[in-house]
Length: 411
Image (tube, rainbow, N blue to C red; front, side, top):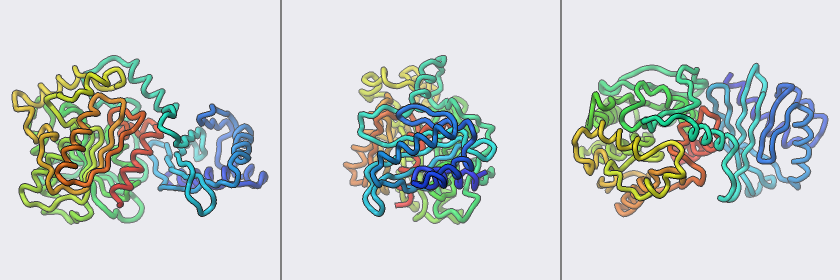
C-alpha cells in the first residue's frame, strides 16, 4: 500500500496537473482515480473523473506556464497520503506552495483535497474547520490529550513497530520499512500527565515523523498521574534519555528530542537535566503546543479561551491537581518556563494561535532566547492545541506542520 500511495500521489501531481496533453492526462485520470472521485479545494468540490479533468484543465489555463513540483516526501497512515508541492516557473522560485491529501481505496484515489498556502488571512482548510466544529460539539471531557478521529487499532503503514524498553521504561519503536533511518527521535507524548498510556493515539503522528524525517522514533510510555504523581513522568523520561545516550547505538549528534503539550515540558526538563549531569545533549529539540507553566499564569488562558475548541482552564486545573499532588508548580521540572536553558541545542516551537496555552510557548521562546538558544518560533494562524498530532484525521495543516518539523530535524 505504501508504494501504491506514493505512486498515485506523484501521478496525480505530475501526470494530471502538470500534463498539458489532453489525451495523456485523460489516460492517467482513468488509471489513478476511482470513477466517483471527489476533489475538494478552496473553490468547492467536484465528483467524477470527467469533472476533475475539466477542473484540472481550467486550472492549467490560469497557471500561465507555472508548474507543480514535489516539495517533500510522500508519507501516509491509515490509507491517507500526504504530499507537499510548490508552484512556480520551471527552474525558478515558487510563487505558492501547498499540500495534497489523498484517500486511497482499492488502490485508487477516491478523495483528493488540495490546499494552497496563501496570506495569513486565508481560512483554515475545510477539514480543519470540520474538525474544529466537531471538537466544539462534543461533550466536554477532562482530557486535554484526547484525540478524536484517531483509531488506535489502525495499521501503521510504511513503518515497522516493536515494543521495547529504554533503561527499564517501556516504549514503542517505529522506523521506516524502506532504507535505514538517518537519525533518532525521542518522543514524549502529551495528555496532561494523566492520559496517553499506552500511547497508541500518538502513533500516527510518530509514524509521520518517522517517515518524513527518515528517523527511528522512540515513543516513551511514561507513568501517569494520579497513580504516579510528579516527578514520575519526568523521572521516566530522563531515565529513557540517559539509557539512549549511554547504552544504545544512537548517535547524540543525530538525536532529537520531541514533545507535545505536557511532553513539550518534559523535553525541556530532560534536556536541562542531561546538561546538568554532563550527558551528551541532543542535536535538536522540538516543542509542539507546550504545557509549560503549571501555575497556569499565562494571560492567554483567559484571552484566548473563546478561540480554543479543545482545552479549558478546568481541564488544566484537574491535570495539575492530579500530577502535582501538592508539589511546587514552579519547579522547573514541571514548569519549563522557569528552567535554565543555557547551553541548549537549537529549538523549534510550534504553537497554534487558537489555543489557550499560547503564552506558555511564547514564554519558553523568550526564556530560551535570553539564554542564548537558537529558537525557531512558528505561530500557526489557524492552529489548535497539538494540531500536528491529529494527522490521522487528514488535516492538511497537520501534514504541513510535520513537514516543517522534519525539515528542522534534517537541517
